[in-house]
Image 1: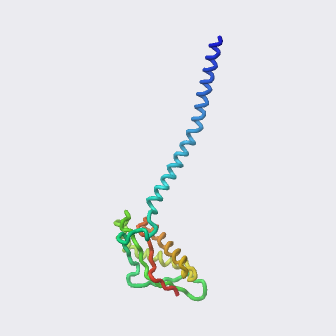
Image 2: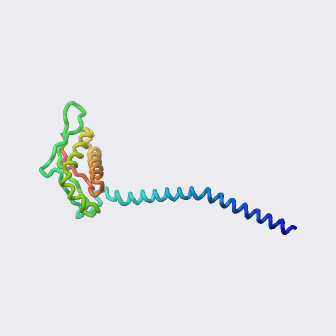
Image 3: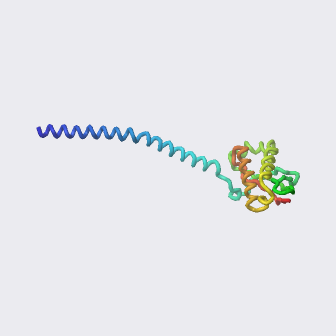
Length: 173
């Protein structure tokens, strides 16, 4: 009788163990799946960031890999600045863009630049209209203007093969 009671007790404990294991599996599997999906999304975002914004610093690219395209081949262009006082202010500067020859989009999108120079110049004009003379005269202001132009141009081409916007010897009046 004693052996039989022990066998029943062991069987009951095994049954309880199986039930608790099933409960744990039922509760942990969905959260583990969600965790795996989150990890995959994070890894995907990291891979995207490593692949897409790989070059934002034009100084890190060797000169033989940089192609410069002038948006104002006839000389400096005049751009109106945002009005803050009674006098109008202008920026007079030649504008050029630097392209990364080693970028995967270079061969396919470089020919599109000639057809879209008007759109690129529109980006330059609209960007200058956002800034006043006092904002644009500072070094930080000029950097902000170039960065904003660069970002909009990259969005226009849906690529980062454009690595810099250059305002050569700007004159602000």
